[in-house]
Length: 619
Ligand code: ACM
Ligand code: ZN
Image 1 (cartoon, rainbow, N blue to C red):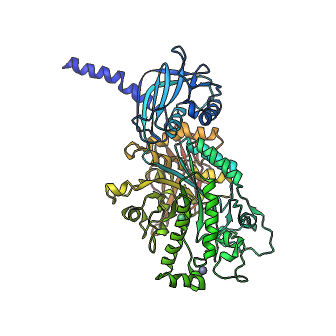
Image 2: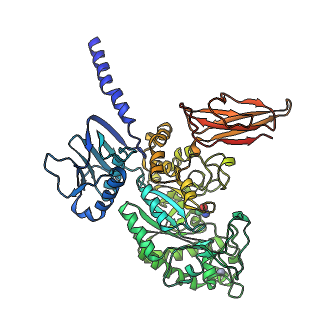
Image 3: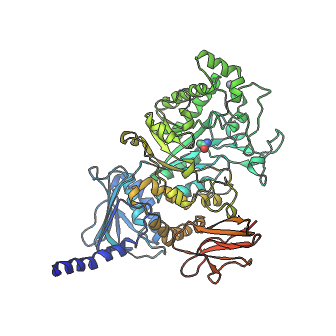
């Protein structure tokens, strides 16, 4: 018995802790399905050959060469054949019979070589991203990679990010940078919100006014988004921009190499002020009433296209035809959200369409509109995606739903229950335009706080669904609306690190998620890595959230301090000085005089301030 126990102990000493230590050595995000380490390591250096299947060489080699150079300062040689036994190699193997799902992979690191095998290009690409996360933060020419086997599969086929470039135009170089970074976290869908009230951002050859007029608005910089005056016809329109069709092709090709599908969104029938400003005959009333400027900010009345005029559909048919030719994705997103139907109720064309088609109300008119647009999308052999409002009225059979609303609406449940393939982007958990720390210390934005841990903790599959219905959940997406993100730097601040949390929600099995591990992974590896890539990630994870109550009986304030990040200490001051580890350590709520200035910060064991200092004057 003793011998038996000591054998086990010996085994645990040898394997258990050792495996543990090494399991923490890499900070994979998203967490793979399984990782098992063994003895030894592979030395990756300039003598390593990279083997890429012949048919993928054109696409993969330039990408791999760039990454080995930028990650490690290595110029490696490529071939399509496994080298002779003396030489070290990293082999990418396409194997139709590999026991992985689409985009899944096996990564095997042995002392003599590394192999990444997958059924498809996406799997090889994703396996390489896992391998890259074994690289050190410094660009060393030589890396020791622990021997291990990683078996990995995505939870969902849709692992998306949406970027709104209408409210604030973002240059194509910025878009490409995001695709490059996000794809390294196995994000595979880039939903491009290209049109809205405040700007039309894509060149359509047949309708040049969409970008000549529709891409530009009067400058209201410095005025709060929701307070902005409409523009006059005479004012110069200097704020905006658009992508030429050549730009779009470049972005799409760049994304393809990175296993990212680009899904364009043309948002109709609402959110169309830039469209009706460019082509007023598509509005409900004819000229001279229909004379508009592109919206300058939040307020955008009269922003729906007419659902009754046939010219609306011939126009949209032409636009969809050009869009279909530019984007290889099988999807076109046609919006469909938040359509203000006030004008439809008064418009003779809309009312005639209602009467002619036996429609009960304007909700059914919206379905009529959506179904006609759906036909135009199908004519291009594409699948239509719409926001969950397209379920209202008579619905949109055959479409894919993007479910965003919560509260009294429950499209996350009803869409799959009614047989619709559904992509989840819950505004409560995945609208990353919301601020991510205490609103008193964050930039302007919708005042609901969506901290990193709330994104990370989300499960996009509602428990109410049956197993069959759950299969209709295509995946998950984090969406960044652009009202409050005028600059690329600010967009990055909102995207990172919450896009990494969303990436893990979309890729990893729920049972493999672990907030503490994820937090450590960010701190020890991904924050510095993002910094190296010149990505402006937010450190709001390390903010202190202050709150207080007034004890009127004793004339005192009771102060509570909390932090999202775990494993650190909060220090605070009440004398106006910036806190340090010499200040008062927060243990539990405390009482102080009203009107005191509270300053608090989160510190690590080395005494380093991790986030910003939060300041609050008590009432
Ligand atoms: C949306 O947030 N209006 C889709
Ligand atoms: Zn109308």
